[in-house]
Amino acid sequence: MSLTENITRSPDAESFQGDMNRESSSEYINDEKKNLEMTAAPPALTFPEGGLHGWLAVAGGFLTLFCAAGTMQSFGVYENYYTLNSLSEHPPSDIAWIRVCGFFSGQLFDLGYFRLLLSGGSFLFVFSSFMLSLVQPQHFYQNFLAQGLGMGIGMGMLFMPSLSIASHYFRRRRALAMGIMLAGGSLGAAIYPIMLNHLFPTVGFAWAVRAQSFLYLGLLVISNLIMKTRLPPGGKKSVDMKGIMTDVPYMICTAGSFFVFWGLFVPYFYLQLFCSKHNLPTNIVTYGITILNIMGVVGRTVPNFFADVFGPFNIAIFTAGLTGAFVFMLLASKSVAATVIFAILYGFTSGGFVSVIGPVAASFSKNINEVGTRMGFLTFVSSFAMLTGSPISGALLHAPQYYWLRPVVFSAVVVLFGCALITISRSMQAKKKGTWKL
Image 1 (cartoon, helix red, strand yellow):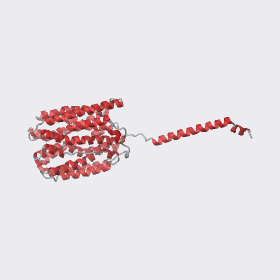
Image 2 (image 1 turned 60 degrees about the horizontal axis):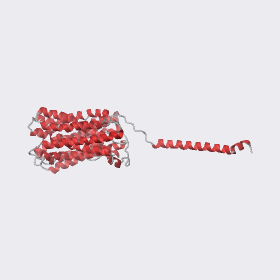
Image 3 (image 1 turned 60 degrees about the vertical axis):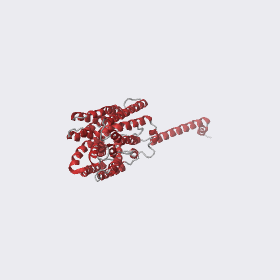
Image 4 (image 1 turned 45 degrees about the vertical axis):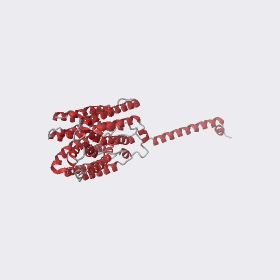
């Protein structure tokens, strides 16, 4: 046997060789684990914070909400027309049920159905609007089917996906992007009253509604062409619904949003009727709600800029508190100057809350795939408040006596209570995250 063979077969050499093999094997396993971890770990999401497609999505959302949210916020024009003309046999509490209302579509957006929601919602919204032009006077059910159900469901299909798409392109500037989109709703609500108040007495209800419907058609075709998602859908198991439903701060915030929206839109729906019943000049009856909504355009952009700096939670509490306090100013709006001041202040603060509550809901998300669901659920719950708030106020108003103090007190109390709940939610979330910027 050679010397080399003796060395190779010696116990020490075998032990050394075994150690080398084990070390090599251990290194190999560790390398494999690292490779598997690198392969399994999803890449970190990056957001362009704009870009051509990002700003086109914002522009498309602006146009979509110009049609959908603008119609909802300008329902006061229809409320006034129905009460005094085509549905004069029905009390304001019944007429308020016609107002468009949305439904839950945020989770469908997260599952990748954006294109179906946008195109289907656009068709249903426009079709129902044209059907509204065919309703007969004093046929309440026709108005309810066309405007309350048809346009309401269409608006629900359009609203949340159009707003949620901002989360695909923006993170740091998400609140501002959403605010710009929502400003479209305020601008629409400022233009529609001028258009309809001039068209109702000149061409009649039917052709006035058709003119509005053709405007919807053109704008929604554009928005369908320029809007597209950027991130892939999360998949059916990506959203932890149980985790969302048991997230106590989020659910308290959702309840707070419900109460704020329960009273927030009361002045939007009854300001024009209030001015009419207090014999204010025709121009302020026509343009009072327009001023309210023009200030909403400012209110939905400026507070969102500060929301990206100080946190959407803080801005939501600030604007909700002021909104609840300013409701009482409606009772003093018995002159042109008082009405203008009320419209300016209330339009700004209420618009600010409406625009930042979406980013507040999104801030609870644990990943990007929850954004649409959390925003959608909060909107879904709040839609019941918006649906029932006006009929309740209409019943409290008690036509033809018109006890204005009752709906105003109802509106102020529920808004301020909702603000208190959102404040509690913020405190709990701040403790959990350890930061004041929420």
